[in-house]
Length: 91
Image 1: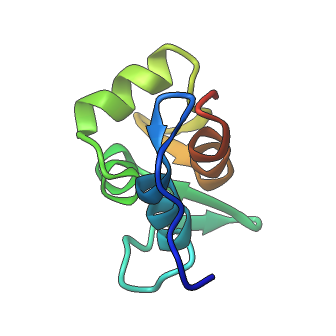
Image 2: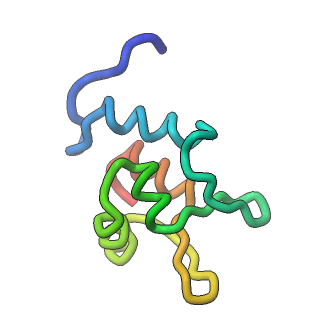
């Protein structure tokens, strides 16, 4: 795709959403961790991938807009949940 789509879709700027989706496959982005084939990001990494603040990612998680897993005392956001949220604007 040579051109980025412009405009809004469900309140999300399409060019930002496309950049964030592409970022999920770029090695310069946060590594996160993979457990049994499931990619997980902590709140800081998810915020960097999504282009928003850590607090916003936390709010989305607690509002059930993003899905995650608690490992010990830490919460990790599923990469699939990030991609789904960016595609649809919903968790």
